[in-house]
Amino acid sequence: MKSLFIFLLIFFSINYSYAGFRYLKIGIDGLTCSACSRSVEMKLRKLSFIYSVEMDLENTEGKIILKESETIRLDEICSAVKDAGFSIRFLKAELTDPITTKEKCFEIDHIQFQLLSYDSSKFIQIIHPCFLSKKEWKKYKIIDTKSDCFQTEFKLYLIHVDEI
Amino acid sequence: MWMKYRFILIMIAIQFKVISQELFPLSEPASNVPKGVIGLRTFNQTYKEFGSQKFMSNFKVMYGLSSRLTISASITLSNHHNGYLPLDLITHTHQGKVTNYITNNAKKGLTYPLNIAGFYFYGKYRFLSIDKKNEHFRMAAYGEFSTIDQAHDEAEASLMDDSKGIGGGIITTYLKNHFATSLTLGYNKPGKYEEQVKYENEPTITHTQIQYGQSLNYSLSFGYLLYPKIYKNYAQPNLNIYLEFVGKNYDKATIYQNETQLHPTNSTLIHGNYLEIHPGIQTIINSNLRIDFSVGFNLINKSYIHQYPMYTFSIQRYFYL
Image (cartoon, rainbow over all chains, first blue to last red; front, side, top):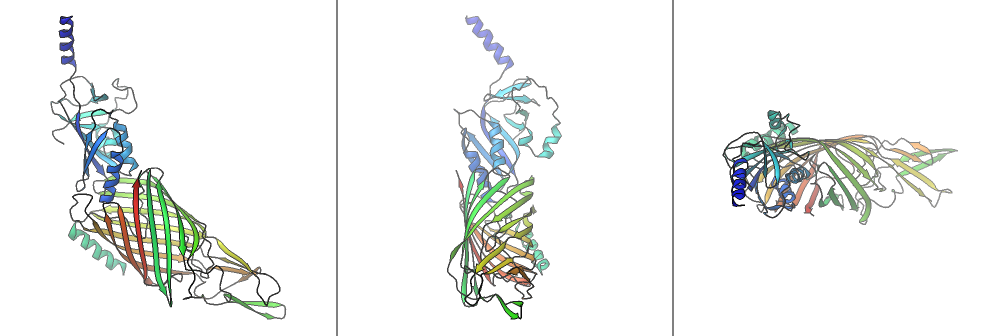
């Protein structure tokens, strides 16, 4: 029994690493006034898994602190910003731990991602048409439509970034 | 003239590197109320018409039905009109069996009681949105509908103020290098006002119809932020200044009395066009409570349905449910 436990521990430590979101950083396009920025913040704050939002009005960026106990729904962040009438320029995150796996499919806080780059950085950017400008999204040319990472239509990809 | 103003505004915008504002006191921008958000707005205008101070107040409820579609319903109160046309708007003489009708000039400067003019509905759909950092280009189509049916004796119609009817148009709001501008092009098709009056010296009821002139409406608005120069938090009060040009080209009124078409030549009843300038100032408290004040003057020709200077004052707030 003890040896099985050690085996499982080694097995999982080789193939998987565990990481959660420490916080998210979101860039909003189209914002031109503090009242507009406030609308975005109010929409985000309505989401059950968001603890707080701190908007940087000058740079039109926001730091999103998540609640630990709630299920995180990134598609709801996409809808909230769109509903306020604006677009997302980027969605980045600092993770609690770096991703160490070389596996293509990776889960963070129960959200499935497909890794597009491998690095030991704790900073990631989420790649999805809703979380990038049209121009930026075109750069990725993701054609892996048959990826087995996803069970839903909301397919999220990840790249590592140096900082956020 | 406005080329000169535009140049001045562009120069000021470049100087201050301001974040632009598109919450124009008079014109609607192409942007919408956020989805699921309710907005309340009171829009008030006043001017002195010779010896009488005229008021118009519109109380509006707005709702963001989707991120792209905003609808609003409002009620208008005004003391602009009496409940019926001036008794001597149309006079006539008899020559044997022939009746000759004459239209007289509009009555101005009379004092009327404040009354509920009617309801005004507005919907706006944003169909194009190109967003960049601190920049956007947006286009929206709008439609308007009014049940307001006031007895007024001018060719020009205003759907929010005095005439029932429908309208629609396109709004283009563009922001680049911290400078915002918005262009609205619209069309109004007002309905007709009808009344039946039994005059003391007439054996039969007099039936009068006025079909007000359809119109092309346009506005060009500029706005920028004076304070704060750098945004730090939502509590900073915003101070914005605006310059709006509002114009209209309207058709003549068509008048029928007892099935006879009249051909008025009075300046208030024939076709016309005008261009106004409305400098304005606005403060936004807690990034939500919006207070606007502007004053309008005529630049080219003039409107016959209001006088100058015309003061506009409005307050607006969003409620995030």
